[in-house]
Image 1: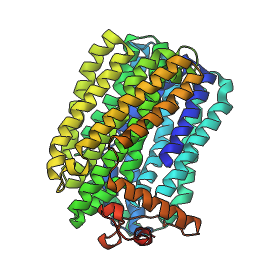
Image 2: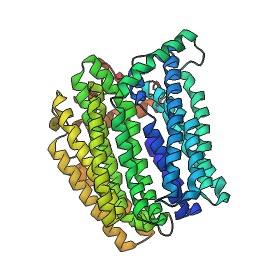
Image 3: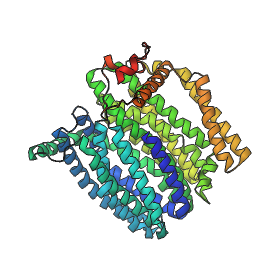
Image 4: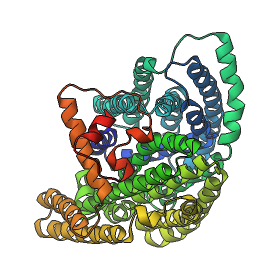
Amino acid sequence: MAFVVSLLFSVVSSVACSRLYGIDVIGQYALTIGAIAIVRLLSTTKERPALVRELTLLEPRSPRVTGLFVGTATFSTVLTLLVGVLVVLVARLFLSGPIAQPGLFWPLAVSVAGYVAFGNLCETLDTVASGFRAGRLLFWVRDGDALSFLLMAVALFGTNSVWGLVLALVISQAFGVLHRLVRMRHFMRFRVSRRVLSDGFATVPDLVRFGLKIAPGALADGFANQSGTWIVATFNPIAAVGAFGRAFLLVKQLMAVNLYASEMLFPTLVERHAKGDREGFARALADSLRYGTIAMLWIAVAGAGVATGVMHVFGAGFERGADALVVLLVIPALVVVAQTQRAALVAFGRPWLTSVAGFLRLGVALVAGILLTWQFGGIGAASALVIAFLIDIAFVTRYVVPHLITPLHKLWRPVEWHALAAACVGGFLAGRMLYRLLGYPFGLFAGAAASAVAFLVLLVITGGVNERDVARLRDLRRMAAARRRGSRAPETERPLEPEAMTQADRGEREPEGSAAESVL
């Protein structure tokens, strides 16, 4: 739900901002956001995944939760401040040199300052919520972030420059800190003893040492993701950057599904691995891969068939990014496959392999990106990112699959792979043909709907749905019915013990009514 609502907010916000501010301002904002992304990458030692590992086995409102949070937040803020200053100075050289946008320096500097002061703290608070799998809390605070940004961006339209978007971003981040602190009281105390705080600070070095094994890969990932926009800016005018940047921003919002999924999946994998539940580990990993890939390809197919119409929504000139959007839409599904398997590697205790995979992807993204962008423009940059992800997936799959006690081909059968491929091809062709027949704007909605329906129909009739899926749907219907009768699910949800698992978790059939009762 959080992902779907966030995506809807993102689409509305993207269209509104593009229409109000124009393609040149959107291009400038894309470079500003790129600078924040670089700060985020350079300022992390991946201490947050290590923090989640600690929080997973604690109870809500344990004093140690506060100690760990304060220690981690202090370390992260100081490091982010130092990196932010460095990035702003380097960005000034690029803005005055090859990018030729010297007037963008101060908006970029203010954006980075806002992230240092507010955005980074929001992310640390979200990490605490993730440690307790508090999906409801994350749902509300992130929707609040998106709504506040949209309202401020519209209200500040009178600036008629990139400053409107920059100020909207900073204000929404400040609001996000306050919103999170109010809701975090259910999981974290705000008053603890000095000894608890000292213990929290003393634990930070251990968190950093573990995180440093992951950090190089995360750093490489971020540079690879942002390389496309900056390479396009090097070879093309700012309008082309705006078109590519808007297409990539849409895809970046889809990529966020991995964040939402991993916040729930990673603590679950850690706990099941610690308890020796290897069958549950393999099932959770495989089904996360399946559901994430299917969902992302469903959206990708619906958008790719009408890509020209999607870009036309943003205003004049954005259509030049349509071909790049078709290729970029494949990336969210690839992110799910790559990052889900990386979560498994960290849970296995082999985090350094994620760094190797990240540098492989970065190298391919830079080399292929420069060559393909030079020859083919935005579509070349998009293709380079896809190729880099495929190399990443090939590497991590080689190490993850042999560790699964249940073979992956039994949990995700080849017939289901073929059904997914057929659904992608059929859905894309249905949408593309209908869009060409009806044109814009009617073809946009009709084509997207036709693609989505064709994808689902082909997926079902060609064997893409298995018994576990049917059992889970039945469980969801029972739980929904129970909620309507007044039942409430606890906000902190931890994996069920074997005797309390639903039939979907075990892959078995149970007597009518038993699965829902065990969950509740």
